[in-house]
Image 1 (cartoon, rainbow, N blue to C red):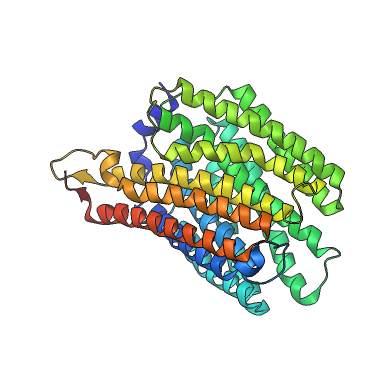
Image 2: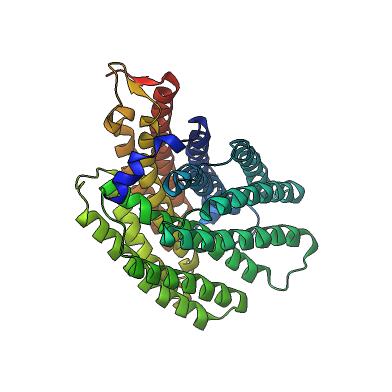
Length: 425
């Protein structure tokens, strides 16, 4: 049996209450709208952003702690128990995680935007508690995921990175008041590397090994090659961290080289999964996924170009856009528009009886609008960074806002069906 068949065949018995994952997804969609609004207000400085408290830092954390983390946790708390055949022991801890993170994002982002240090530190502390609670739940599930060694390995790597990320994030928050770090900028770069590549990157790469075979009805990638990709990914993050903390362009260059090989190997494995799967027509969501793979491969190349100064003074900002927006955000929205109808289908029935088709659980037009707006907005932001044009950045963010509203409309439509409990067909 394919992994997709095994996954689907036993999923229903380990489902969480529908309100649990969907509250994370709905909040991520709302924060996605807020992200583009924040970028409009930050357009005067975003093209040359290099760190520091203000609107640009607030926008970055709306994307990371808000959109990406909310999406990842909503998917992980449902999909890992299903895939590992180990349901969560209790539901209340993940509800607590949600409320801690939802409230802390508001405080953290508000504090960053207004340069209100006490509010920022309070938000950072609350998010740290929520993330640590999630880490405990995630670790408990990983202990029982022995049947998925590659996913488990990526999961443990993400978990270690998460602990380091939380520690460094709190240190950076307090450093803005008492100034105890020797090199704030180096610590901030290490924090970014841990968040983008250590936590979100490892989760994206790891869960790809179970999600893509599920969607394509294919076998999982060959174990030895997958583990080689995992080792390369870990080495990349370790080198990047060392290079950031030591301010060593040579070590960062080595991280880019290893990362490029790791990215190509991952894309090869995932393309093999799709080409050997029984389901060939995967829809518009996989247009986003394939574009995200291209951005993944380009990420270390842009990192290297930025180190060499080949793409101008905006090189570091452009690197952040390619990695965060081009790779991670594109990938997660491509996967999310598959996960949301899939989970909804487990909780609703047709009026005439029987499970609904996935195509009945979400309007296609909003997703088409979102995809076009997403790509145009990212291209516009890239051009704005290269040309250092705040006006172009504001226009690109406005297009992104239209796409975010369209995606939120899609989520709202699925939620309405889930609440009613049945489709009209």
